Image 1 (cartoon, one colour):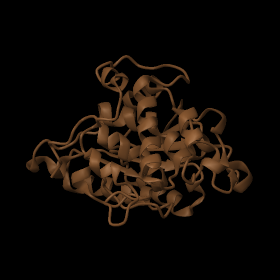
Image 2 (spheres, one colour):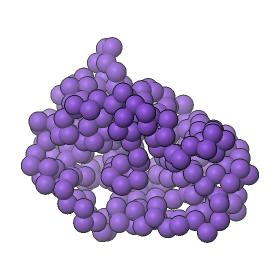
Image 3 (cartoon, helix red, strand yellow):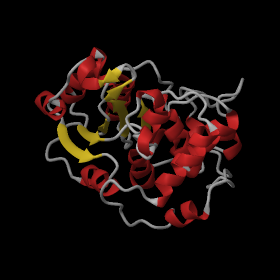
Length: 292
């Protein structure tokens, strides 16, 4: 079961993050709030401490999305009897898992010492997430294109068994080049899975270059709308906009997609949208100092 006694905050995190956790005022625009900045610092701290590589850019583009979901929308079980009714979240773009780990640590589902051991031999937290429901990790991901099909299956199972849970899945825009996503999307519409929400990290970057030069998908929202999804398009680093999109009631029973316009490496300053920081080798001391 959930590690109920996990610390909510890591000892290394500053007082800014503790203050921000009690402040529910939405942050508008592209500026990052104190808590978002501290989570980014925590990720850099772990990589510097462990002297290991990590997908920093893909993680930094999804932090606000994760915070909104875990702050207000994903219902976590408080007792063993509630485990089957829990909401599910799948990080389909598994290489962004450092963001998920840091947010789960903040929420008390992952112990600080576990995150401190990231990337070491035999450690439970590695460069791609492995399923562990007790820690809030619903699926092993990393092979792109599998998360949405899994999420559709979970949502359909919930419908069949009349369970009240909702399934959220976060996919990358480059990942949507994989055809299995669209097969799953058609199934979601066919079965009117209103208990499914897809969030797209639209950072317009892939490891091999700009998404539009790898395989252009310029009409992202139109594609989902034509299939039959309820579609919203929001700035992906604006918690208020993400929250408002999630709160809009569905007019008809169908799945929802929220296309989040993000910046790869958001918060990295001069390194934002840098291909080098997609999977960064160990950051140098000077880089860490500058970024902090």
